[in-house]
Every structure is written in structure tokens, then in C-alpha cells.
Image (tube, rainbow, N blue to C red; front, top):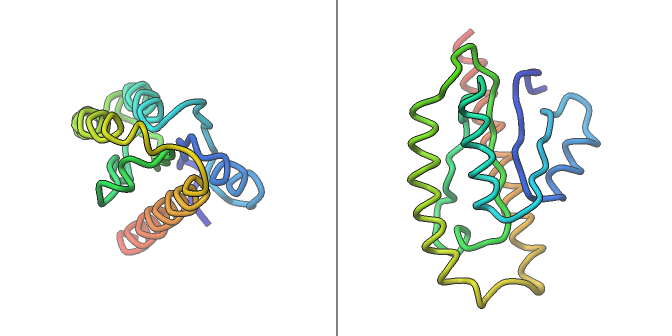
Length: 137
């Protein structure tokens, strides 16, 4: 069961609905927009007592071009997450480049597949976070 201090930031309605249905799931901030909008919202939260937990970029270029992005953050005593802000800025530049290349490929049947892949990456980040938290006790 994830701690109460976790926040899922996503533009993936599938992820948001799943988190809302499951007891003990992190709170959700649903972003209306594309993955770059998710990164922009993350920048705001990382300057408001949140820390980036999951990687801001997916592991490969085709997924970077996908229409969905979900991030895991946690509330923090520190006002700013400097390392997180820097990671998001680098990710934003890289993702903007890749999304411009993929602009003509968007939509259709692939969207559901991309939504599922995004959900899987978020689940992995939550599982890794739980393992790390458990081992540090």
C-alpha cells in the first residue's frame, strides 16, 4: 500500500481512473493536455514541496512520442527539488524534439496501447519506490 505522501501526475485517464478506484492508491493530479503539459505541471509541483520519484523520460524513443505520460512524485519537506527540476527540464527538451517528429503519427489504435504502456511504467515506479522504502526501514 503506497504511503499517503505519493502523488501521481498524469494525462492518462486510464491511470487516473485506476488510482481513484483502488483503495490506498496515491492521490492523482490529472493534467489536461499532452506529455509536455505533464512535465510543465511537474515543474510547478517540484517548486512546491514535491520531489520527483520516477524517471521523467520513458526508456525509448517510440514511447517518448506517445500521447501519455505519468510521473510519480512525493511530498517533501524541502521547498524545491533542484535535481528533479533539472531532470524535468532536460526531459522537456528531449521530449519536445521527439514529439515534433511524431506529430503526424498520433491517434488511432495505438493510443490504447500507449496508455497501457504508460500505466505499466508507473506501476513499476511505484513497486520500485515501495521496495526502496521497505529496505530503508
